[in-house]
Length: 347
Image 1 (tube, rainbow, N blue to C red):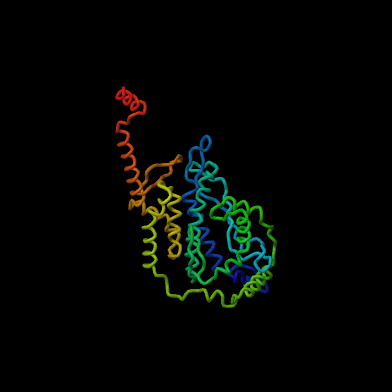
Image 2 (cartoon, rainbow, N blue to C red):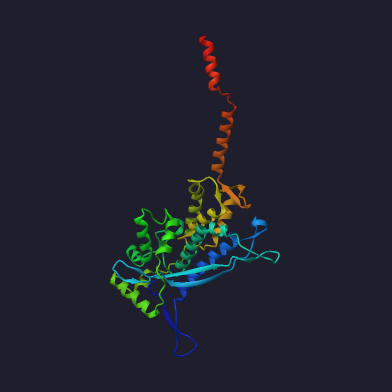
């Protein structure tokens, strides 16, 4: 949003403080909190014993730093500035208090494995918050990514100069972010410029000038994006969510037969995007799918966490096993036996 800053007086007359609009800032902070809550419930495990082989649930501690700009990058018209980009850096402490009061390190791999799940939960929470502010969302993509309805692709691309810079480097290598995430991360680190401390009013003026240059009506931009206040159709939202959830078993088993809980949570959270329903529903809906036996627990991984599949996939695997047993029960002639019998016939 171009209204990335506003001024307001504090308790001292004549003094001014800089801040982002409370609504947008709080909406994004709420999405971050929902994501951290999910990680605390699903992905925060302390290590214990030799080599940290034993794990137990522990509380999550994180320091959050909300920023409002990306790093400076060159835009399509040659301008170089930092785009408005409200985001939060979360620094997680690799230490937690265990049930017996002792301190231990986190199982960091479990946290890393939940990266895509965290992304989907964040998208679901942020989309719901954006809708609560009166905006509609559209162009829902992989893992729940979305755009605000009414913001053109051209405007998004222009004010995403840093992303365009990274994609351009990837294109030189014949790749893109979805197909080569590790390469994209490496290029991001290698090509990023240093952050430059800038005056708030100067940054706002730069954004307004750039927006006007690409044809945006700055004065009425935000109001034009707000949807008419018709209220949230809860029944339609629930129906849309249920339809998406009904399709999950088939979608998740198109390329794999065994599903981890983090993948189930990720998929459910992505289903919530655009419905306006809270991201906190993800865990509940995942548990409901298990209760309804849309997914079945078939085993546990090395750390004792459940692994799931669908009834259809379990039935297919049972058929394969039965076929294998049937084939194994058939007496097969070895080549040497066949050749010996042929020699006896011709002798």
